[in-house]
Length: 179
Figure 1 (cartoon, one colour):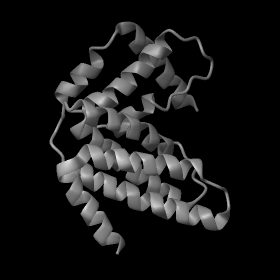
Figure 2 (cartoon, helix red, strand yellow):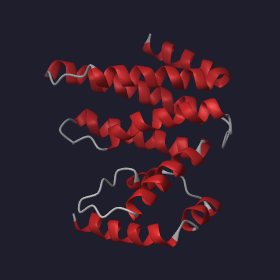
Figure 3 (cartoon, one colour):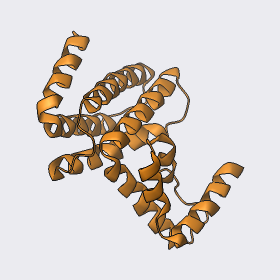
Figure 4 (cartoon, helix red, strand yellow):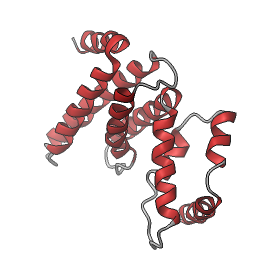
């Protein structure tokens, strides 16, 4: 039954991708808001998220590359915020490793289809960090770089950013490598 439902969502996403993304984002937001730390609930929580992320990654793989539809880009941006939460989960549960792997696959697929949304998030955070003097800055958005698909054109776009935030980025990467 789960596989049938996943296949239906994947088929619908081929024609109504923005609607599917919007619905999945709302589901993830509600699930995260209602989360408790009961051991029985945790297992079901992670298994449900695995199903959702697997479905999401398959929906995304059937989409055209670099879409410019505004409603889709906005929905993907909201969904990106939800997905990024799964990358930083502590490894306290074997299902968490699977969840992180699926989240990274989704982020890779997202960067293939909606690179500008992911790039914008990374770029915005780099610009914030370049003007900040925080001792322990939040680097989670910067760490998205390791999950994205970067071809030559995208790498040039990434490297053509402001020099000021790249100097800050190099300093932050050196901080990351020492931790």
